[in-house]
Image 1: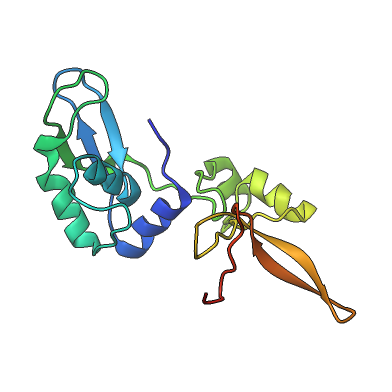
Image 2: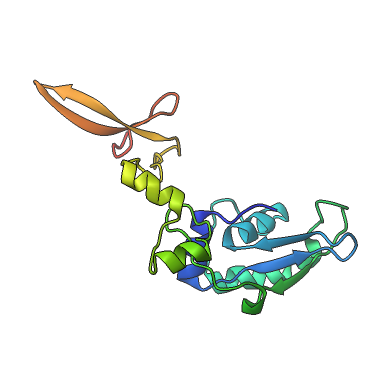
Length: 172
């Protein structure tokens, strides 16, 4: 079962979309779906485009209404059951702000109010950059920071790694 991504966790916190459970009645296959996974399932059945962005209430309603069109990846059965995940099913866990993994209860008891797991805390203390990479707004390739010299002055600029590299921010 795929894990929720950081962006999914943020969507859940910001938009109030909970996780929904997809279940196959034939083989008992089960998957928890957050907003990102809901979009993936809706794309598979052709209900939304890859770049579509919609209100969270509409996303949930469309996801639930299309359940009869979903196909089980294990047995191929058409029509999966959708149910909202309830709070009683999961204890309230605190997630790491960087990696979104749950912080163990022992760590929370030892360091109340911590927002980072032990691994991410260690990386932060060592000075390792844990920020998300930046992507080119034109083509979606990874952006890197490189030196640019002009007139004896060296500046650092964000540059596209696409092939051929585009020039984000310039119109052409």
